[in-house]
Amino acid sequence: MPNLRHNETIDTLLNRRSIRAFSSEAIDEDTVATLETVAQRAACSQFLNDWSAIKITDSSIKQKLSEIGNQMYIATAPLLYVFIIDQHRNAAIAHKNGVDTSSDEFMLKTRYRFTQAQNDVILALHAMETAAESLGLGCVILGSILNSRTQLIDILNLPEYTYPVLGLAIGKPAQNPELKPRMSANMQIFENTYPADDAELLENLADFDNRVHQYYDLRNASRPVDAFSAQILAIAADDIAKKHEAEDVEQVTRQGFNVA
Ligand SMILES: Cc1cc2nc3c(=O)[nH]c(=O)nc-3n(C[C@H](O)[C@H](O)[C@H](O)COP(=O)(O)O)c2cc1C
Image (cartoon, rainbow, N blue to C red; front, side, top):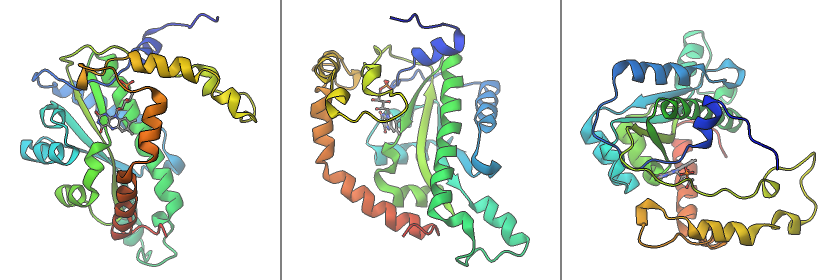
């Protein structure tokens, strides 16, 4: 077995786990500025800078997002961001310089650019998350705020060519959850080509199922979580995904992107 190398950055990443309870302590403005600057430093596709983040300081908006996500810790997060795909700013630049942004020739609204911008959002968000962790703060990424894209877009007043991707809640941890297990590397990290044989992919599944089943999620600490396989089966048959998919197509189109 190789010995992992350690330094502060690696240990920050290795000890990362989602934090879902925060102390009410406010985050000082130097820390906030540091986190925002780190996010801006992330790589971005074709240097389009096609993401933005909205810092939610209004407690009534936090409350609304928390209701959409059905997660109370969204309302109590001392620092809360919603990261969005943002071609609106670039469209304004193009429009100012004579480009007809409503025409099909305006390429920044294509599905391809949408996907690339989504990648950029994630890189920026992850940089912010890692920086926050390195300063002793805790974070949770929030897909739940997309439970109603329609409401979220309206609440944030998102204009054409923007789209919400994820939230990030940050604060001083008020809990100390154990690290959630990960599958063995040979099930997830391959060499040169994808394994031809599924048996290889699933080789250590029983062990992983068992380790996940033994993990206690502090959201429901009275019972162990389901085995990984059981979670996959439940999500594979989940009707909510269908509803999200339909709303996504409708809302992405409403925001002006060509995703058809
Ligand atoms: C894209 C994405 C969306 C997520 N959305 C939520 C969320 O809405 N609420 C939540 O409590 N955790 C959310 N999480 C956190 C995951 O549940 C968590 O990362 C996963 O269970 C692994 O646990 P760990 O982060 O503690 O290692 C999200 C994570 C990702 C990457």
